[in-house]
Length: 88
Image (cartoon, rainbow, N blue to C red):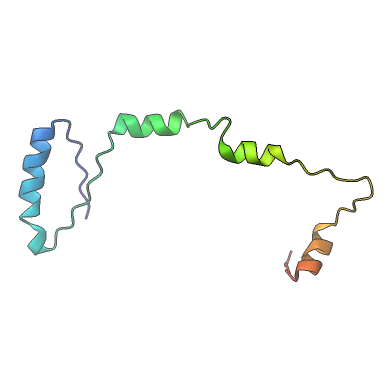
């Protein structure tokens, strides 16, 4: 069984946690998530945009040119070369 409590008051939270800690010997497991529901929802609704990151700049500093003679393999040919087998 699971109980989820959303406690806005830090002082009340500490009192509830103190009480629940006394029940640990009876097999109670306490999982604390201090993320506020609004902050959690905001993280999903407003994802962080990564611009000009080191990764992006490293990837664009040394572009690789592809010659006109480059042969692109089909999926089956690439799998055969790599030893990877698929079943469709």
